[in-house]
Image 1 (cartoon, one colour):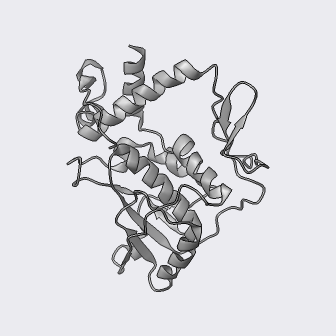
Image 2 (cartoon, one colour):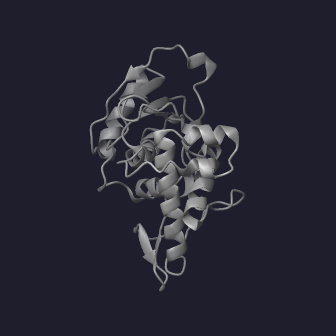
Length: 249
């Protein structure tokens, strides 16, 4: 769902299970497959130059970066400083919930979803797995788990933000506040936004694109965005496999 750069409907040549074959005919899935293929090819070309950062083992606390940078160098190339600083604390328990409708193209959705992860951290709310825009651009029925690896997304960010598949049954029918966050907002704006949860347990965000500033944010919030984009938010297995098949064919 980003700026589309071509269809690429070659999924019929690959021996995939029935459901992935049906899924990969949708516009968003074809676009995601092309992006996955490009990412796989770029990885092969850059393995000798760029150090890739993997997920930290979950039975040990993540290593902490003492500096204030987003990028570092090991003498052979740059690597992302995505691990938290020594000031970073585990998420606090909260009864606040945030639902999101992620809009735009695929790239806008990816960045918007990770921005909403950062916002959930800022307001100390539990994030419900975002809904993908199915009307304004793609006319596509794909859900989050069709495009992205949902279990990995939840697991990878469990030390940062509480993420759930759906609202608890007791909150399914409660009145929800609806809030369009101001574009390119900083941390101080979201401190004020917290007031919404005084009267509502659930706040719905109709748009996720460009809701968070690029600069002037706490370093740990910036690193959280990076962890989400480069470690947590991966394409689903059928799309990843198709992308690799295209890249190495």
